[in-house]
Length: 240
Image (tube, rainbow, N blue to C red; front, side):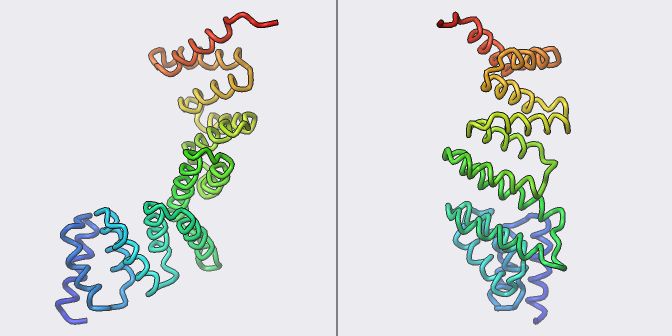
């Protein structure tokens, strides 16, 4: 590598670390154009192009990084994100699984950063399934996410919501109570617990939970709306 390319590489990497992607791109592009076997340069360019919304260029950069270094987990994960953004969900999932498998081999233990990133990626796929009404598939992806990060209560809450929407209320209640064991005043889980209790027909327990929430959070609009809704439902005359 000559001095010009060495300087371009150093400048590009530093600007990239500063997240100054506009100024970093031409320096890194200069190195990439020289066909040097630096997988991280192509990975950085892929991140930049993805940030610019240029998904096809991002895809090409990540794929080139993986051609140079097929075991480059970060590039594989970034390519999976790009596929996901391009609507190529099956390919994204295959890459996630491939990254997990290769990172789990002896000597390739997943570090905390990668575990967290994989968890969020599984959750993104689950969200796509859930929004399409494919709740069983969403549940599976949320469980994969929680296998990576079992303490992420926001993921467990979304799992509980999908379980409830799939008609699996008792399982949803178990997940919600697990959240509240971890964080007793996590309001979204307490509200979810009240709705799920109501969905099982236990209006008394649902109202008790909402009243308890309103003692601590008297101005919470959701708790008020849910309480009034359940009260109104309970006051309707029963048809015999």
